[in-house]
Image 1: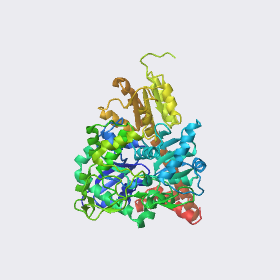
Image 2 (image 1 turned 90 degrees about the vertical axis):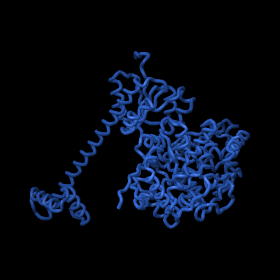
Image 3 (image 1 turned 30 degrees about the vertical axis):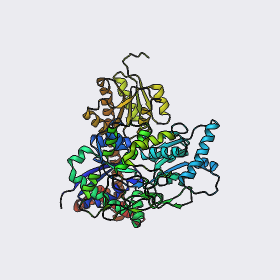
Image 4 (image 1 turned 135 degrees about the vertical axis):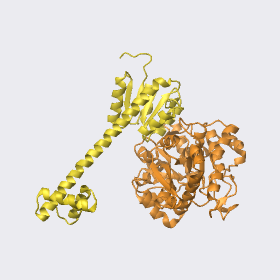
Amino acid sequence: MAMLKTVTAGFLPLTDSMILIAAREKGFAKANGVDLILSKELSWATIRDRITVGHLDVAHMLAPMPIAMNAGLVPFSAPMVVPMALGLGGNAITLQKDIWENISDKENNNDVDALANGETLKQHVVQRLKSGQQKLRFGVVHPFSGHNLELRYWLSSCGINPEEDIEIVIVPPPLMPDALASGQIDGFCVGEPWNSVCVSKGHGRIITTKSEVWKSSPEKVLGVRAEWAEENQQTLSSLVRALHKAAKWCGDRSNRPELAAILSKAEYINISKEIILHGLEGTITPSKGNTIMLKDFMVPFDRAANFPWQSHALWFYSQMVRWGQIPHTAKNMELAKNAYRPDLFRSALKDSDAAIPSANMKVEGALRQETAVGSTGRLMLGPDGFFDGKTFDPDKVEDYIASFAKDI
Amino acid sequence: MFMTSSSLSILVIDENVSRAHLIEAALNEVGHSEVMLVHTVEGVAAKIATVDPDVIVIDLDNPNRDMLENLFQLTRTVQRPIAMFVDRSDHGSMEAAIDAGVSAYVVDGLRPDRIKPILDMAISRFNAYTKMMNELVQAKGELAARKTIDRAKGILMKAKGISEDEAYALLRKTAMNQNRKIVDVAETLVLAADMMGDD
């Protein structure tokens, strides 16, 4: 047997680190010639620092992070490439339970509808501003995160200005439930299992989810130091193949109890498997003791969930421009798009039975229902709608950015 | 306190109180009198705004670094932009810091030769602290091993009616025959005795 190639991967304790963890624990890495070493980190800043100096070769990363690194928006960074995505969905927006109970008029309401609950929240925000009460304070995990950008998107589509009407602060994911319980924040947008943990402790109400705001939306990616990717092309391809197999295993319903048990271990998420299972199965508990089924809450494999769509990179870019994180220039837009590398995904999986999209970009939010698309093998995409009915055409980024200037 | 115009204010954020004091003492020794320690990140934004530090040293593994970096980017909280480390091109120095578990933020525009000694000091204290902790863990392990062997000897003395020396000799012989460590053999015996409800 050929020698295994060692790859060191960083991750944060979140349910969506599952593909990396399953690749190691279920032998997909070894079967593809990779000895995958996993290193648990406690902040995105540490992931960034360690991958930059070479302690880590690859990492579980927030989808906009490689774009921010390549654009030099962070204090310290090396060039990154994204050869694959680590799934769709998986986040939720949780509000302090008492606040929600006071503003929601429906009894036993377990709705997580983005539009209706956004409207309820807006009434409350207006009320607070009028009566001179302190602004609601929301926690997100990082400025360059899907969480920050999707929370802002949802709020502003509901008529709440995230820059003026509320406050947004940064809190690390595992500390989110405690920060809410102690009153440091009133709500948050975070990945699982931290919403379910907060509800189970009786402090929070999940008021909407990432999948409700934007179905089939991108969340974490595999970030790879560009220099390492260049010098280890064979190993990177083996790793992508291993992670793709692991993703398929994670996506299989019958494996979820076992997956939850693995993720619950102390060296990974260190939270009970029952709580982790909520996010994996889409059995979301908006309030304690009440369960609803959101079948596309989190999608690790289906719907081309591992394909690094350049239209996803450009959507994040459009929102980074919208909120003043990066100036819009033709050069920055190219840099954002090219951080995502569908060519690397294709070349790694070219001899496999994987169904791979033929295009690098798609109009986001255009598929109202599951649709077969051009690909190698049979591939179904969507539904992928935004809750406000907008669509994002990656060929018209400037028009899209301009459309927001009119709102807020 | 007398302060020269060239003195730098240094904020050390470390939940580990003893390690923070080690760094403070070391920095004081080389003449930095303006060293402030913070052990919890609660209220750290206000602290940074008041102190307006030139250098911030923080444990690399502090989970709140994302929050801190965001503060630095908000000009309302900190007047001047803060860049990480001394010099982006000084890769060796950054690697040493990250190896040691030190992260540092420095006001942009400060001369590298003024910052580097501070960073080097923090790195050496972090390393010294880690070494001390490892030794402590090892010492604790040795103590636990001695206790296990003592219990195993007691079990053998009682069960076989032999002396302490004979019990130890028996443990040693078994370990040699099985190519195992004495403490491992002792542990197996203690576990078995626990299961039998015997001691």
